[in-house]
Image (cartoon, rainbow, N blue to C red; front, side, top):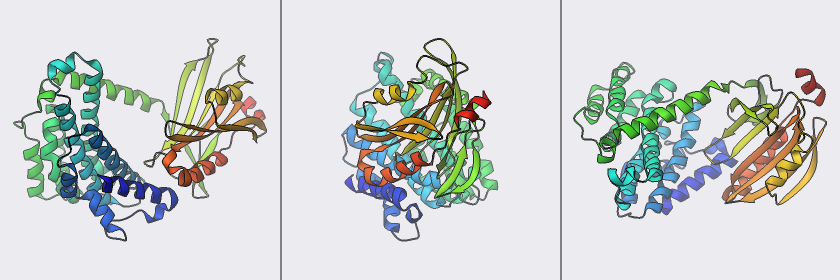
Amino acid sequence: MADFEAARDALVAIELARPELLPRADGPKAEVVARLSDPKAVATALSGIDDIEVFLRLGEAQATVHQLYGTRVARGEGYGSEFLGTSTAYLAVAAKQFRAVVDALKLDVAKLQADQTRLEGLLKMRYGLRATISTVMFSPFEAPGVVDAQEMVAQLGIVLADLAPLLLPEEAVALRDQLDELARAGARAPDLQRLRQALADDVPRHPLVSGLLAQHREYGQRTDARMASALENTLTPIDRGPEGSGHRYEFAGGGFSAVFDSPPHASVQQSLATDGVAVRVQTLGLRDATGLARSVVCSSRPTPGAESEAFARQVIDAMKPDSSKEVTLSGRVGLEASVSRDGRQALLRAFSHDNAGCMIIAEYPAALAVSAAVKARAFVDSVQLPSRADAAAAR
């Protein structure tokens, strides 16, 4: 267990300080990748564990590694083999974790139907596992030339028999329908047949899947709808080109920008201020697998609110900062603060903007303070806001 956590921490430290040195399966530190990708090593680590907290910690370690390499694949930087290996290991842990939680808490259908909190937790756990299976299986099409179809099929075949009982019947059918596409992409027939057998209609479902089919379906539909709604409000940020160690991305129509090392998410939401006036909330942000979260959140409203000029002070005071100071950006006077709470640290800035305000946030695990603080500072310093004159002209 400690080996997996140590390997995870080492990779996170590399990603923050020297991302170009993230280990590859055929390069220096290949033994670290092998350790995190080997289902036998995972099985050994899991054997004899009966403590849910230990399972959760191991699952968290594997999830972080899976996300690290998944981010590289999404960027088109290679690491396809490493992504597949660590994904397989993560799925092996997730399947064992699901069963361990059920056994340790002695969960059954009746007990879950009487306990909505535990039921939601179980539904969420299974949904996340299914989503990861889909991500892995579709990765050869999402990242052609980076993730090899035959390698994916061979890797997934190692663990799918253990995962299939946790799938809903229609999910198994949808994945099985994908196998013909994988054959056309170069996957070999014997390996595909292994997946077909694991996804067959007659595979027995886990009792807490077959006994709660309606609840699992409702949870999936609800979650899919929420994600679809979020996508409707998602915009494509404007890439203004290379700057420093990343690219400058601008919120389209918002006039604010920042430097990110990967394309950030951009979204817009409408809300109501305390005086009933509509407020438009625009967000440009990114959270990476190391736990470093960076965002710029700018709110605007058609008329000034009573709190508009006091926005920066209200935001910072609400955070109960360790320290704060006055700063200036784009002709605006605002506040910068440092906050430490619940094992995390944050560097914040707040400015009055467009009858409301802008928040700049870089947050990271306290355990990574030395390496993550450098990236946090670089991000906060990179943010550009429109001048007051430009903001007024845009209204």
